[in-house]
Amino acid sequence: MTASLLITNNIETRLKTSTAELLDLERTLMAADIDSSVLRDFRDAVDYVRKSAWAVQEWQERQTKDHDTSTVLPMLTFERIRRATELCKRIAIELDDCTAEGMKELSEAVDVLRWRLSGH
Image 1 (cartoon, rainbow, N blue to C red):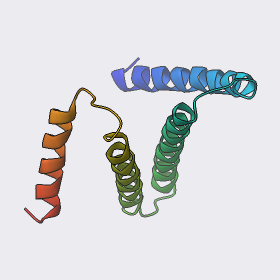
Image 2: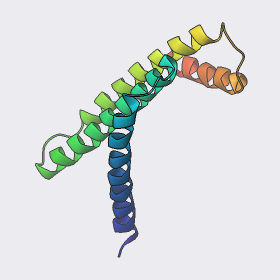
Image 3: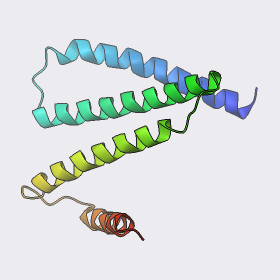
Image 4: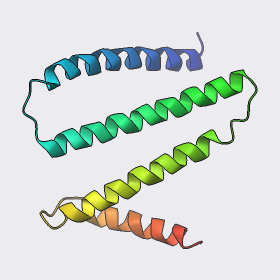
């Protein structure tokens, strides 16, 4: 068995397990009293994974049909930019309420991003 096939089988097993866990979580979620910020973060993460899975599936289907795949990655990049924008807005709001670890690293990453966005 090739390494690629082993990786694919492992990913498929993880996806099946995750799907079962998510369905079970849905059943218990309805009866629980959960902090809204935790729910929002969970929803965002699930949405991000869903869109990434869609992009991978779209890429595979286009490759199989010999269609143009060049538009799939820009769509995924756009989604990542949208998600990063929302996350930055949320962090900005939360900074007023707490001091969290990792602020120096975040600041450095934002500086690099700002430099890249300015055309360098």
